[in-house]
Length: 310
Ligand code: ADP
Image (cartoon, rainbow, N blue to C red; front, top):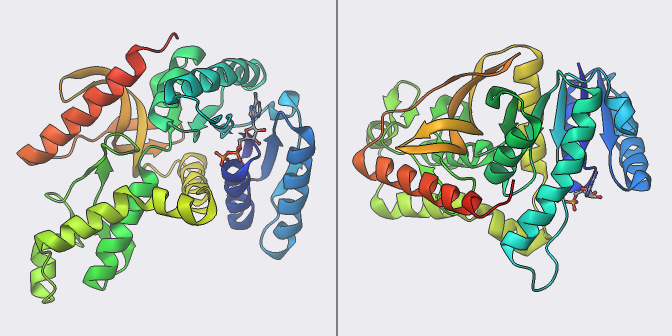
């Protein structure tokens, strides 16, 4: 499948690199407002492919996206000194206004994967701007938070993260919700498994894992300026699920008719992803505190989008 990436910065190029190394796409086309950057990134990534795959990687204009099955939107502008989050959001909404129209003019059948932050809000904006069914405009949401949660739980329990079934729901951001009550190690609750292996999940340990998941991005940004490898790999994983119609379950963000009584809000819950985009939403069984936290997260996102002129 041909995959387009608009925004050849750190996140876009990392997604391109992951797609090329894994051979998930037959062709990757990078588009950026800086043509020079797109060309340089494409050439650099293309030099990696002979070692691992036959993926063709090139830079192009919007015309070059014709025939793409998926287009990843990783474009955006950075916060100016003193700029409010809302002002930044409005400038990014303007970028998306131009980009979404240009993409759909040449690739009307593509599934859009949104990576730009704040991802839940950019997903809602893209859904509204595009007029596409919400199931075809998928934000990366909490895929990375979920991956971090599984990895920390797996490390504590001494098992592979792939054998841990646990999700982070809600906003990709401060109000996200780690759902402990339904987390499984294999087929056993993580709490029970932790007892069985003599490594109980004490309240202190849960708080430490929660903090580690919730604040990972802040710590990485402090050390290296921004985060991109994790999300790049996550986006490549979503492309694979769509390209191969895997119907795999991911915590991704789409505009959802109702979550915890909040109407028309984009946030993450586990969803089945396949060739047509999101196929089914799964609303997991939660305990009272998790329900309340998810309701708070949904309400907060609703508040943030209310002031936007779409
Ligand atoms: P991130 O770390 O999120 O990837 P970057 O700033 O590295 O952030 O990348 C964002 C990219 O989006 C930049 O390369 C920038 O040139 C690109 N971009 C900004 N506006 C547009 C636009 N209108 N069309 C295409 N690309 C754009």
